[in-house]
Length: 475
Image (tube, rainbow, N blue to C red):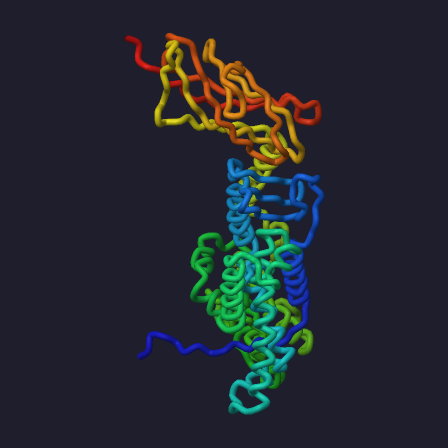
């Protein structure tokens, strides 16, 4: 007995209905966002890039419209990732694997490629006949044409991805001129290959065998979660329409037409109950509702329903309204956590200052003893100007009595307790700072403070960084 089942190609049938139309909408919106976002422009002034969404690895910045994230603010990105994870828990707890059925990239590109199949090969029956047909000129031509469309879509998918990491028009010009960075070509090649293979050929196998989420999502579901459900008490026993007409009291509403199986993108039979292959796309609901309408029976034999409501309906009671179904405690807890994290990120984003300071003391040597007995330490100080214009900033020493400082671009006899520099827009300006303290100074902690001195918005902002001053042990 084989432990592995031979793969059978799934050929979903074309269907129209409210869930199919919603799936079309989600696909168009998500693909439009993915392909179009790098080309959106956003005016940030003369000192910053004008691409609306940009991951600028060279300068270690992340731009998203008016928001600019610096490396030391990575907690914003971490917060967004946590929100995405909790949002997935929230959606799954409320409506099952709706993310998988509508917005998952694997689902979106698989759906797109399946539409290419219908465009080139025809609907379900025509594709099945073509699969069984021997290879000939017609089949070769159709396969070549279809796979070429796959490849073009896959190439543009990989090409769109690299546009998020550099100015899109410039990178496009350099890419086709052959002067882009090698990593750009390598990235496009890898993403082209993976999109072509996963979306064109692996398809439902990714959802069933490769994706870990179907195995995790069961922890997010309970008897109160809305999922796509076959109402067996109403549909069983199954029988064809002719048999049901002859014996109306012997058969249920299911006429065993298999349309729910024919439209399923993963090829499962929802009538067998909840399965790992069900991505909750609800196309089986569209197919079943159409059949029920044609045979004059009420819709909803396959429907979004909770297990609790199924039991209530089977007992002759009315199911609860959808809004009540969504208001169960687990969903509300996820919603509360998701909202709290989002509110915290918005508060941190709205209250953050645009001035920053980092200090790194030299460790080799930790100090130098001068001829007059004074002690000198060296530091690398970075003044951060996080605004889109140059700013005057004052650096001062706090807590180290009698100490003065100077930098490589000034003479030692100009040393003072404070110094002022103009920091260019959107730059962390590095300074080599020498701090000298009078004879008798001992090792101690002190701080640098930077203060914005410009008169425009953000004047008076300051930041400080504690560090250590090393000195010889007293005799």
